Amino acid sequence: MVTQIRYHSDDYQYLQKSIVPTMHFQRSLPRLPVPDLKLTCQRYLKAQLPLLSKNDYMKTKKNVEHFEQNDGIVLQEMLKKKDSLNKNTSYITEDWFNMYLSDRSPLPINYNPLLVFKRSDNEYNHQLLRSTNLLISSLRFYKSLKTNLLEPEIFHINPKKSDTTQFRKLMKYLPESVSWYGAYMYNAYPLDMSQYSSLFNNTRIPMINKDILHSCKSGKHIVVMRRGHFYKFDVLDHQGNILEPSLLLSKLKYILKDDIVPCEHPIGILTTTERNNWANLRNNLIKLGNEESLSSIDDSLMMIALDDEKPNANPISIIKQYLHSDGTNRWFDKSFTLIVCADGTSGLNFEHSWGDGVAVLRYFQDISKDSTEFPRCHPENLNQDFNSDILDVKKLEFNLDDQMKRDIKKSMNEYKHTYESLDINYFELFNVGRKMCKKYGISADSLMQLCFQLGYYKLHKKHVATYESCSTAAFKQGRTETIRPCTKETSDFCHAACSSNKPSNSDLVNMIKQCSIEHGKLVKDAAMGQGFDRHLFALLLLAKKNGLKVPDLFTDPAYSQLNHNILSTSSLTSDYVYLGGFGPVMKNGYGIGYTILEEYSGAIITNYKEHSDGYEFRNSLTQGLNQILDILKT
Image (cartoon, rainbow, N blue to C red; front, top):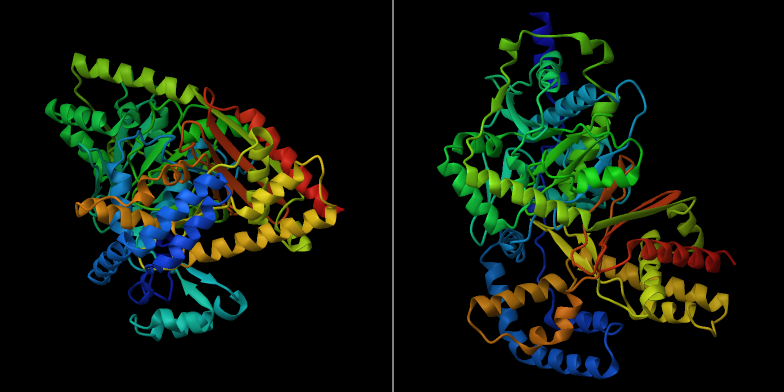
């Protein structure tokens, strides 16, 4: 009885008990602004300048000017009207969801990113202990979120002033309708948390032409995958309390002790296929009597994959395991899958349509801290056992006919061809980070982006469309905006740095600083909803939806070229992340996930072998970065 009371206590059941409700600021968050049409046109032309020849630029400029004075005016008014009728969301939200859900490309590599926890080389880095403690921390996060007790996500400009108990007490008593303005007075900026509800009990379901997001808030069970098999068990009791640690550990232990052979026909591989194909195959699975098992997966609170692999400390092996694996022990449709390998390496792979990095990273950081600093299961618990009847672990069974078995084998072969065509490289530099950049008066992010531009230019002697992701979570239901890091300033520097008649080092240093200043402006514009990519995307969709002639701006090859992102980049800065990355968005492109800490910089580079040479590009990047550092140090 004492044990039961202890595990029913708030200390065990909740990861946080915030005095400010989780969604306290949501109602008063500012709305994502619809940018001024003239400014969008100016920003678009500025981004095209380093990419086009003089003649092509003049053609594009003519198209843009015509758009600004004619079709653009009509479409802008239509967008503003649409925005005014949907005050509880943003002008881009619905279109962005539809963009993700309508794309028929397979999810792994193309969309689903990876995050890997920092490894702790101690006795807790054991597959069973690690998975149990991560599960418990996840459930504590889930319950705190569900009961509005999770700390609201706030960006503190001056933490000493606003990240305080006094600030929280004041915010608690402000009405929700004005709470954001109260935080603003402290130079603190609450962020949108509308995506958080999709972290749990959520999945993407394939449908013909457009998928749907499915949510089942009543699910109290999780699904665990091992060797391609699926197991289901409850993690909450009838009152919604998290089960005691030793019981959860024993349930996972039961699965790990099941010395079952790898599934000959693992249905998880079907989530790696083209979406219309997967929709048809899923319908066939349902016709074969598998609807209940599929519903158990769809409705589960979360999913854990227990892998037999031991990637150890090899970054390339870890990235392969968490970005794609062989697909037999994955269900890529789930909002996220917590993956724990046999050597204790752990991380997650997440589906991207429902949300962006802000919500996932918050969950990732909170459970990383909680599971390592306050583990609920310990090495001495490993020998504890419960009667298997009490555990109530159910293995999900699937009825497959010969055709479905052939489809699964075909999917396995096709997926193998895809992931074996992927190349992965990485680099890291110690003593190069925010601290060093501050010394030279430049931003660390601009340094990395300049490195990518210089590295590519050294290799190919040209500039290409470059994408850098920027969160717009400062606004209600904000998603992301695009930063265009290839600028006239970076172009000029690349030409100068690679010239046989180089300017003086003093001039090159000034050019680097100008690159940083311009990049800083682009970052600020994007974060404040003043980029041009999402705006033009929304205007184009309005023209198509309303049967209007598509303006010449969008049929101009320059528009397609700008959106063919050869360099797709995204930064991930967290003390809790060991590795983070994603696949290239174009067959002939590179996916670059990079990290900048105080005294460390690193990047993971992905590409397809038959279209580009990732190893050469990696070497060119490091040469470029070292060249920039040499210039700064002189």
